[in-house]
Amino acid sequence: MIAAATAGEGMLDAHGLGKLARIDHIVVLMMENRSFDHMLGYLSLEGGRADIDGLQASHANLHAGVRYPVHHLRRTAFGPQQDPSHTGTSVAQQLQNNNGGFVDNYAQTHPGDPDIDLVMGYYNAADLPMYDFLAQQFCVCDRCYSSVPGATWPNRLYAVSGKAAGSKDSKRVPLYANKSFVRHLERAQVSWKFYSAWKPWSLAFSDDHYRSSELYEPFGSSARRYGFIGDALAGALPSVSWIDPHFFENDDHPPADIRAGQALVAQVYQALSRGPAWARTLFILSYDEHGGFFDHVPPTTAIDDDPAFRQYGVRVPMLLVSPLIAPASVSHEVVDHTSIIKTILQRFCRAADGALPQMGARVAAASGLGAVLTLAQPRAAPAVP
Image (cartoon, rainbow, N blue to C red; front, side, top):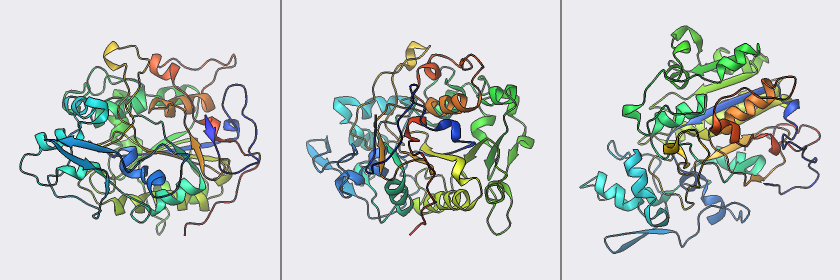
């Protein structure tokens, strides 16, 4: 279900694709390890957005008989060892008692750390100026779940291949075992690039066919006009662009400073909005998993070929950006990482009879993201304040 704060959006088509056919460029940026409430929950608590299922002042966890409420974090980075656990075992504990085990788990996995309530902390508009801008101007998805109640690599494998190949923990993921959506793009002769400051690990670790470092492009810079930035400004983006952040620097993975992540998002938006392809672009911004931070919405069940993976992980932020999206839109549709794949396949890989490539039950059941593209005419790009 899509809600919008402004009137005049177009009618959705019978397949819920919105104006997806008018999109020529899909750009994906997947950040690291933050939950929806941790990053966007402030929109309801402080931002007056009653249309978004975010934080309430009553949200809290109990630990050792003490109540730990949600609270605004006064720092943008954490200590070197303050990386909340997000293994499959830890996530199971965090979700106990209606998402009441986050502080319990942090205290157990970080003995001696007095800041056991940092997992109940959230950031706000002052801390996240780009996210606040994008939430006001485009679409927030408040039912976006990570694909696995577990760690980074199982979730990133889902994001590019629709399955995790059997493991919920990064240390035991069978890498190179899957087939990515990129194979279907190539069969359909659709252009694509993976951009990264380093090797594009999301693709390289998933699909053995794309392990070569020769298959990546640099992120680039506006000053030198190369890589993703240069392609966007020159109108030379492929049909599908995937951006891996500079891991451990601007990816938001704790203890990283979130200001670096905001700078990265600003670079991407500025390049897209100033480029000649803006009117035909959909930018999808999401996170691989919640990173051990509190979220109040229990994950729902998922359809999957593997019975061990029939539950989504914790909610993560997702922002959808396009000139065909009405300002202050909200999507309450249940989506996960495979919704990104579904949207790409719907736009670029549909057969003449309407069939989509087969990538397993999770992708087949996933909702696409095109329904948010409701405007009859593209909007001029709003300027960042």
